[in-house]
Length: 445
Image (tube, rainbow, N blue to C red; front, side, top):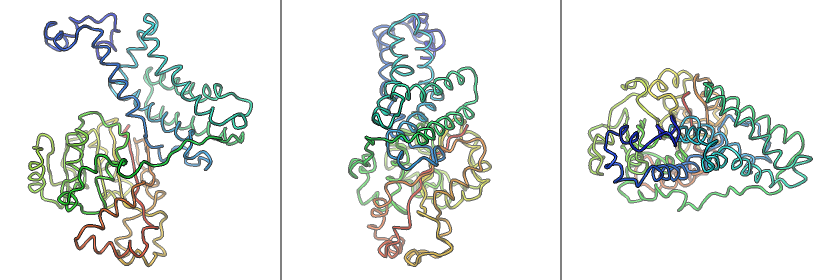
């Protein structure tokens, strides 16, 4: 892929590929019949990755914040989320970026390459977008056809990709893309266009929604939880994640290591299980009992305010049910956490929060289980967006309420330990209507 993207498909020989790998042509032929077979495997991998990486990616939290209600949960919102995710993917994922360069190089001399280029970066995207706008119907589109709307929406996206290839700053280009989508939706609203056929966004059945977490429903695993089900939170948090395959992930605030095991076993990441209060020897013994040695999951004692890692150690940081304890300082992200994330890396956060901050007049139901000082760690989406927006050098991709609130709490309240029993008092009194979980996704520029 590296050679194809640099020199073009036709210019690269099997001998060149073998030399790059440090093997003989004969050894290479044991794996692939010919150069064409190598190319076919690349296309197959591209097919798998393309929609898997962008599908179901969350609409960035600060994107279209004022989107009219009638555009939410529709094809327009879906289109904006998909476009933002694909822009990041095609410009910053190494494999996808090289594939894009390959088909761009070869499109003018190879009809098949041109067809692939059109599919991913031309007529295929226009056709997909046109279907979204066709759902508006004649009245919704006004005097413009769905095809024209599709061209209006897509043209700046293609331009921004070209600017990236010319050396444009990815962070600045992402901001331009957000502004384009905001202006486009504002134009739709101004002209009174409405969706006649909304896109269904009904959630899947619970059993299907958490296929990975359901493997850990045995009592032994459930007894290791230290709060609302962290595995379901992690699974929802990582839907459509863009962490590179086999990447190194810090599980910050891992507790007894359940989420660290989950990341290694279900996603194939190399994991650093970091926690201040759990003993790393105990966690390491648990990981070993599950078949994961320190080469796959490394247990460390670490204070989030003074992390003991080298700069840019991680492709991503996962923080489930702990960031609210140390991340409320607006300087924390830049000073304490971002230095350890590689450029283009991600931070995924799931934290307990409130539907709306109510600290000045706390409902009595909440006080059945928690005192005001404990509740001061829990805030709403607007609070967290303000905290995180103060950070420099990031793209804030999502700050929004999670969907699994009821399920993760039910799993926790079924446990027989003093902490779960204490929490039951508030939830059984109806405190759940004031609470939620908040999903935060951050990309380091």
